[in-house]
Structures are given as C-alpha cells and as structure tokens.
Length: 452
Ligand SMILES: [Zn+2]
Image 1 (tube, rainbow, N blue to C red):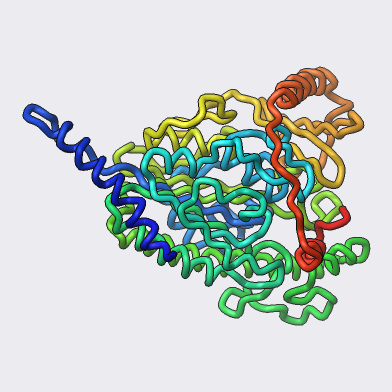
Image 2 (cartoon, protein in one colour):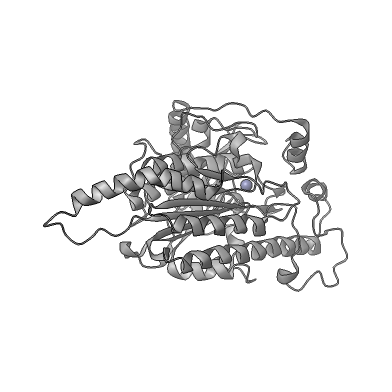
C-alpha cells in the first residue's frame, strides 16, 4: 500500500472527527479561528561532529543549508547526546529515556514494545507520521518503527553506500503528501553519509587530495582506517578530515533540498524543524577512530538547531547552557500541545531552555562508562570506578584531566552519577534481542562494530 493511500485512509476518520469538533467550537460567540496545528520535522544526521559544521564556526563551509536554517533557529552550543552510538542515542531521543532504562548495551538490543515512542504519542493525537531511515540500527528489526504510518527503510544499504540523495527523494515526496493533508504531520528523516566509510564527493571536495600520496583513500573501510591508528601522521589525518567534510557538505546539500521543499509548501511557518546528530566521530582526539567507546565531546557533543513555529515568537539565538537529546520529546509535546507519558526524563527546551540541570550520557559498548555535565564541568566514570574530570569552559577538547587536582568536584559529580545510575536501574524496560542472519551480521562487522 502506498504512502498516499495510507494517509488518506487514516485521515478520513480523523477528518470527520475534526469537522465535528470544529462545529462545536465555531458556534456563535467563538473567538478568532485557531491556527492550524503545528507540524514537526525531525532530521537526524548520523556521526556528525558539531565542530565540523560552518553553522558552528568551522573553517570550511561544510553546511550552507544548516547555516541558513541557523539564522531562523535557536542554535544550542552544548547539546549532549545520551550515547555515542546510534541505537541508544536515537532510542533515548525517541523515548526520552536513558540507554540503561532502555536496556540497550550492545548492538543486538531492540526497543521494548511497551514504550510509548514519540511518533506513537503524536499518532495518538491525530498526527500523520512518516519516517525515512538509512541505518539498520534504528530500523524495524530494532523496533524503531513503532507509531509510524510509513517507515521507509529502502536506503538502509550499509556503510559504503551513498544514500543522502535517495533519502531526500523519499523525504521530499512524503513531505509533499503530508503538507497536502488536513491533519498535522510528523516527519522523521535520518541521514547516514558522514558515517565511515568517508567518500569524496566531486562537488564538495574542498580542493581535492592535492599532492597527498598516503594510504587514506575515498571509501576506505572503517576497519582499514582503524588498522592505521598507530601509524597515521598529520597529513593522513588532514586527508581523513577532508573526506569526512566532503560527506557533510554533500549531506547538507540534500538537507537543503528538503528544507526548500518545506519552505515552498506553505507549511513552513506552522512547522517545528529540529536538526541534530545521534553522535559525533573521533579522529584520534583521544587515541581512537570512530565512535561508541568513549564519552568525550567529539562523540557526545552534537549539533542542535530548532526552528520554532512562527506563532511562538521565539527569536533566533544561541543557547550555551547544556541541553540533552532526551529533551526533544518533551519539547515537541510542549510545542504541539500533545499529551505524552508523564515520566519522560527530559524537559521542554521551548519557549525557554531550562538551566542548572545535570545532563547524563553513557555507553555500554567497548567497555562501560558514564558521564555527567554540570556547572561547566564534566566527570567521566569508567566501570572500574576510575574517573576523569574536565573543565569544559577552559578545555573543551578535554586534554587536561583535573580529577586529581579537584577531589571535591570529583566527589560531588560522582555522587550525581551514582544517584542517577541507581534511579535508572529501577526503570529498566528492555526489548528483545535482534536476530540477524549471517549476511547482515557480516555487514555490521564491516561497519567496525562486530567483535568490539
Ligand atoms: Zn550513529
């Protein structure tokens, strides 16, 4: 069944209900007509470092489309993902719960059926819901399709494929159909190209390889890149970053097409647009390539732009206070007026971002670690109890560990982590284990995940 058919059949009943409600509300003496409900567009770019976007001051112009969006949006300069890899990060975003409570520790943990995901809450309030994704780790096998009328997984093609164009084709088609419906919509779009393997795109090559003659090549598999960890030099790293930036610029161009379509649809002013990433990427900032194993800023610091619907009167600006991806679900409920579960972990970021809260993040892969950001400091606690403390204001690159020098801060933040972990252990609602055939296991291994 095609997407259009499904929207019409679902919309028919709700349309009749809406008409009935309108007749009741529009009787004599009723005030001015209500504005149309708010639509929601949520764009998540996989593996996108905040500090590699020109929208955040990066030296290369990697993100002209997002730079333009940023002029109309609130830009959050210290947004923190709740995990440094896809499934728990997007799981936390879609449920407003932490990875421990979701039971996601390894790559085979799916979301529980019992959770009420963001699209389920919106669908329950009469929203049309559509998702387009490009990585199996947030696919239907991992139970991320809950609440979506249309869930497109056609572009889950593995690490080496270039998918932004295809994802955008589907997303723009769906956006056109959704904007033509009488009911409000939620559109979720997930892009994957900045994830390894990094592929050079001709139109965004940033000068090309020049006279570089080392072993870094466009399309290098992640396991090959990881194999170079001990021998890369500054020129190799420069080339790796150039290829990564080429992927970002390429993806940004396609996001720009989607944003243009939305601007032209007549629904722009009534649409909440959110752009973020599930996590970043490390280029030996702390000794490794890739992501998932540690909780440093290059991995859990993510970009976040929120363009509010015009009626809220939210002025574009910058929020420096730390915020979390678990805040997005409550933010969307707040702006749309939809009621969701009453035990969400996050807080609404609009109309004004909350301040003075500790923000937590964690990983269960390649070891186990937890971190808290509070009062400009970040404490990372490993499973064995060892700690690192960083002053994010003075040392955002987290190069100087202050744990020994500031034991009182370690103790205070360590107590916050302990208390939070204890609370999370009481909330676990885990899903099933994902069963994979050999071919798909092999593909995941090629992503560099398997066996870690
Ligand atoms: Zn990811």
